[in-house]
Amino acid sequence: MEDFRKESDLLGELNVPVHAYYGVQTQRAIDNFKISGQLLSSYPEFIRGLAFVKKAAAKTNYELGLLDEKLYFAIAEVCDELINGELHDQFPVDMIQGGAGTSINMNANEVIANRVLEKMGKNKGQYEFCSPNDHINLSQSTNDAYPTAIKMGLLQMNTTLVEKLEKIVEAFREKGREFQDVIKMGRTQLQDAVPMTLGQEFEAFAATLEEDISKLDNNAGLFVEVNMGATA
Image (cartoon, rainbow, N blue to C red; front, side, top):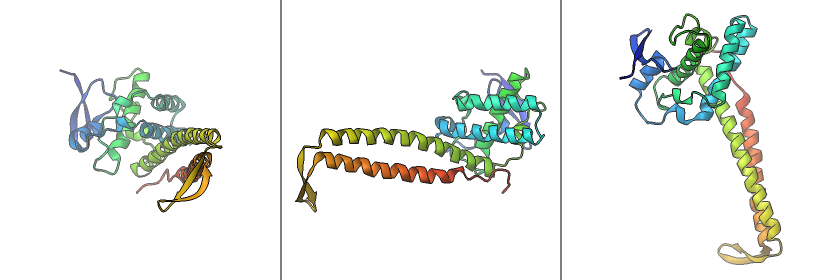
């Protein structure tokens, strides 16, 4: 059987797998919210979004003199690991949960804190040296960190979507050139209409997708507006 370490919160002590980077609040979420079976670990863009938020918050807290240099650089380094796709298996919280995202926020805080402790040569759970609440979540609330992370995830997903749409647009343009001399009948209300080329049809597909790309980029600009540093 796997070994466990004991961690505690305001509700009391709880066993956490000794090798897990998450902690007591994540373990409570695992136990309490077995709802959808869709885990945070299946959404890498969201995890990266959380890491971007935590790294930015740590940088700000360091610049304000609230975090010492050594701790800040360790937090930033671990956030970069998450951004690069490491430790994503340490996010086992169900995507459907109580607390409006608190468990997901704490999952990120605990994983980062325990990875920092490991880098410092400490044991997981020695939160007096790096605390999920007092250091990783410093100057934040789930009410700002969680939606900001979602926005960061959506921005990443939009970039990927636009890149793929641009490839489709180019493919349609290529077909438009290939079929520029192929005459066909247009169709209106299930009847033959004005003749057109098959190339014109593919060019129309490309133009429509280009408009969609423009709308996606314009809407994505709204996601850079964030409300960090507040409370409920």
